[in-house]
Image (cartoon, rainbow, N blue to C red):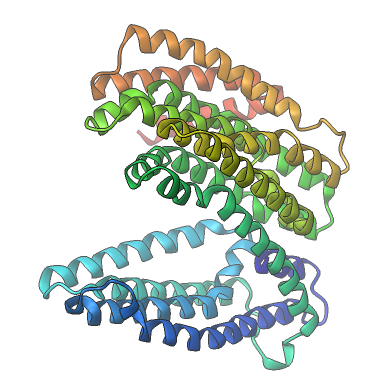
Length: 451
């Protein structure tokens, strides 16, 4: 929300408005960090309440001290990374993060390699990478916005109130997401067994990677949404939104279909000692939600940009509580362990599908003042492409059983090529196809001249 408020202030800058937002964000985070010091000291002083070996206690204490210091440091310096978002230069932040990750890995590796093994080396690597990130964020922040200043007199209570209000509803959304996706492992551990909790966690890995990847794609459009909204350019905002949805729809059907039809073979090759059939069954249950949720992932960013968090948070909380209640009810009715596992994975997926078919497209069209069913064609086209791709995948995977990594990769490439062709035909319109061809032939021409 700080990103959103600061970006809007940049494009409506009057009477040092952007400096007021920047200063308010900085001092608010500083005050928060100061308030967190005492609880953190209490927690670190009582780490012995956890089952930690006396031999490791000093190591763990120092590690957590460094980690919490790094956490507070990142809170205070967070505002210096906002400039990449507001200027739509997220790639700079990404490059900095890549170098920071390399520094973190290198320092941690060197410490473990040349000195006696200590847990707190991990914290040192993380802290130094955070310092590196801060220095570069500060440098580019001054470079992008040289007239931006942090001063106590710019601290504004009205801006703080806006931040706190938006932050509260954002927190409600996060809590709802914990109810929705974070309790499943705890429920499996409590109602079934720790072993099947491990099975569920493995089955969630690949769907989580897919979701994270497309969440990142959707997030790259968030600065453009915010800039269009701040500039009061509603038509450009709609164009950016539709473009992001098309991009996600174009690619999302491919990994989903591949995982559905090649997932069992992948699990057999990757984890031959595990129960591959149970793993793929759970994975498919999770993926069913993504079939409907991924195409409209960008709408979540739209709700943030438009500051429609209250309604979004309440609906998220409602769906999460319904999912939790139905899951508990069904678990009390059935005793079969495998069925219970499917219930935990399946109910949240079913509720997610309902949410993606009702609230997400309907509320999105409402706040943009579009026709009620504006976003449903994207879902229908996506399902149509997946249906054709599924028939092809079924034939390919039966002709070339993926019992080796080479055959698995061959099948995945075959599905990917057809998926790109189908999406090119059915998802893109004439103008989009022309753009793709222009980029392709332009790139081809460039490569020829380069070679």
